[in-house]
Amino acid sequence: MSYKLISIVGSGEDYNDEKLIKHLRNSDFIIASDGGLNTLNSINIKPNLLIGDFDSVNKDILSDYPDIQVEKYPKEKDLTDSELALKKAISLTPQKIELFAMTGSYFDHSIANVFNLIRNFSTNIQISIISSNSTIFVIDSDAEFTNLKNRRVSFFPLGDIELLEMTGFKYNFDKNKISFLEYSVSNVIQSDYCKIKIKNGYMIFVLFDEDFI
Image (cartoon, rainbow, N blue to C red; front, side, top):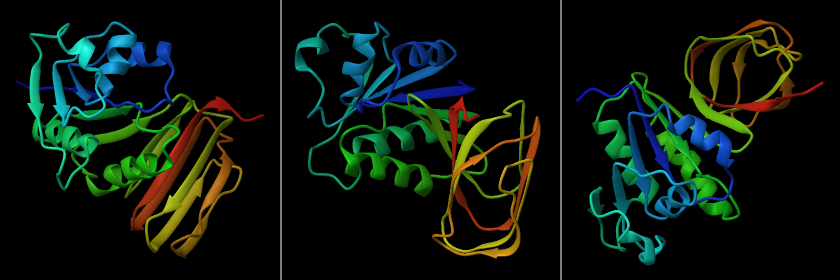
C-alpha cells in the first residue's frame, strides 16, 4: 500500500489537542510510539500500529485496542521507541512523516527526538516534528516559503555550511560559509515569498505558528 502521510504520536506533553486532531484526520497511517497510545486515547483516536517496549503505555487501556497491529520490543535495546516508530514509518516509504508529542518536560527525550529527526533525515521523505507551537525540520538544499509573512523562525547549522543565502527575512544571510553554532534565533519572515539556498550542509529549521509583530 502507498501512503502519502504517516503520523507518529509520542507521549510528550508539548502538543495541542485541536491541532493534533486536525493533523491526524489527514493521516493515512497512525503509529503510536509506546505511551503515544495514552495520548491518542485521550483524544479518542485509534492508531493503526502500536510499537515499543510498553514501559510507558497505560496497561489499563490496551484491552480497548484488540484489533490494532502491535510490534513489541524488549526494554533493553539500542533504539528508543520513537526511533523504532520512525524507522518503521520510513520503511513504508510515504511522501511525508509527521511526529507529534515528541517534546515536553523530559529535556533529554526532547533532544533525543530532534537527533532522531536528524539521523533519519531523508531527501525523499519530508519528516518533521510538530509541537504545540512550532514545526521542526531539516533543510539541506534550496527551500521556498510562501504566505508566512510575520512568522518567527530559527535555524541551527549541523556542522559547517558552504554558501548560505537567505532572502525575505528580517535578518538575511549571504555568506560563503556558516560555521557550526553560528545560529539564528527569533528571525522573522518579512515577505510573502522567502527563500533559503544552501550549497552544501544541513540545518535544523524551526518555524513557529504565531506571528511575531
